[in-house]
Length: 192
Image (tube, rainbow, N blue to C red):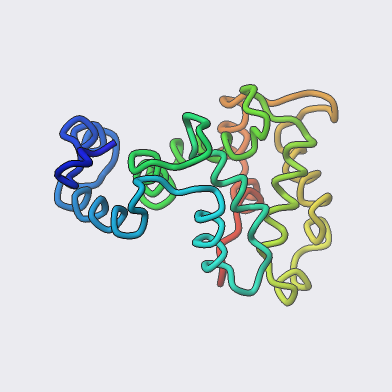
């Protein structure tokens, strides 16, 4: 983490983030100053993250999805997000390349973090995504996507796997990249 005595981001973390994100040094320093104001401990708890995240979906039930997003960002499994995890997450979800975003999406669907996703994990995440969709929008979904189970079934079909099989990260990325409809099924963007 940053040098807590001076309140500045450590040189090591700064260099790492400049190398691994599209953010400039000035942007990273500004993000860090804001992060420290919002999170004086230098960490965001799951509960704090959920509170922040649910503000982006005021007309939806975003808690379960926020928990999954938090889990996928908490790369060291310590139950909090530090500045580095926070910035990498921000980068991946806003400016990252498609394959990096799909790597992150895979980690979101890999609920048990065993390196594979199963149909039940796809169903769990689809259910969480579905809760983000306002009721009015659910009514306009195609018949084969208007429940979490149907959405999961449709997505699972893209991977050409049986119900008890599992999908590795490369298969997930390839399956989504080769099927335009799959990318829409793994996300929800308000107002679209």
